[in-house]
Image 1 (tube, one colour):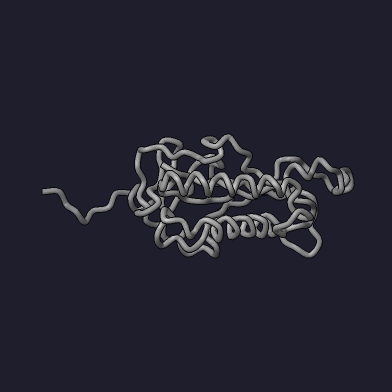
Image 2 (cartoon, rainbow, N blue to C red):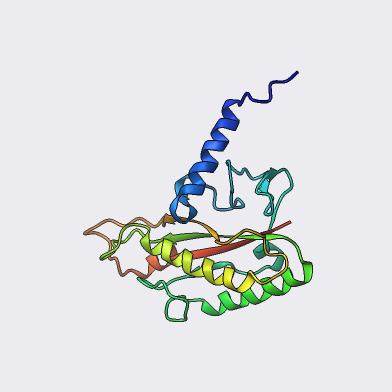
Length: 201
């Protein structure tokens, strides 16, 4: 008879990771440890061939679809320097936020498929006055994540027990050298974004 109480190293690691991710403030992890294109994980690592069941939190081999691909819409929204609000002054392509949300709501209402929302946020490498590294990306991701949650949580297919939207953040890829580069250079605007992902079966 198989010993049901023996836990192998991979299962032990999965349990530890699940515990650590559940106790972190706001469920945020370092962007350097994840792949932006994977569905959000509620436990152990999620590989491109694995998805997470949004009702049970368990991994399965079935693949998830990102609504941006299904609806052929932009899901990356760009912020102006130092801005974190939910308005045209903060988000340069604000109308695309509304368009994506409207189309996603229509699709999810008709399909009644279970879904999960996550965000990935980036901020430029330029120095920040009065804020820590990644503070802006966390605020921006939280702003858009909370907005999408508030607009979609009334749908019948909203996952029961999901009270927040998972998010990940990072610094952008455009290098900044103090004393050499101009922090006001418009090129850094390309690193100031939030990507909203809505995963469905």
